Length: 225
Image (tube, rainbow, N blue to C red; front, side, top):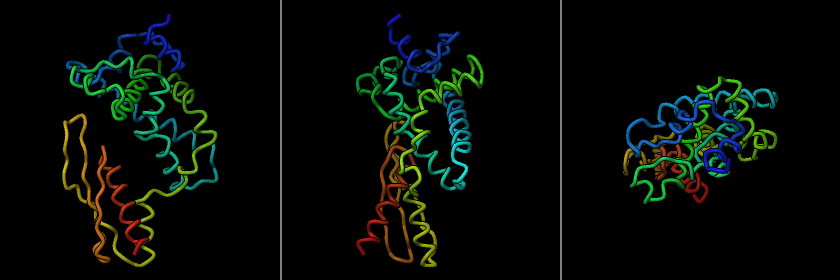
């Protein structure tokens, strides 16, 4: 078989017994009716559990903070979207007409969410060992040779430690504005270091990413100062 759904299952390393379950995992809420959001919730938990267990076993020398940062470098929207692109998952998505016209099949947030939903579907189709195997099939290289950025502290952590080293209060993050549709929100977040009168903003597709960008911009201001 050479249809997109069959190619996706081959690349995934798992063939579904219940094909409608896979179709559900590939159905974005813009398509109306039943969609993949519940499966995404399940798949997110499974993915984090499997990756956490593998990192714990492979890197006994790393402390909790380093393991958390390393996991975050492997399980984030950009990284998951990259895996989904390797699977050509976008060509299998079911999207509403608006998302189709705007290129939703290429959007990182939609691809990452759909990949998590697919993992949730694998679990429901054949249990934990099957979803674990499917996850490790695609993340094997990243787990063997994790990017050095995974060990590097993120911007919020760097800023927090820099302020603590000066005996200064922690920064305050505030969501100033949220724009866009519910499925494509953009967060505008400010980061204020009141003791130093330093303030910067970050804009991203999630609150967490916007906070990281704001912290990174504050660090740049502190370096320049």
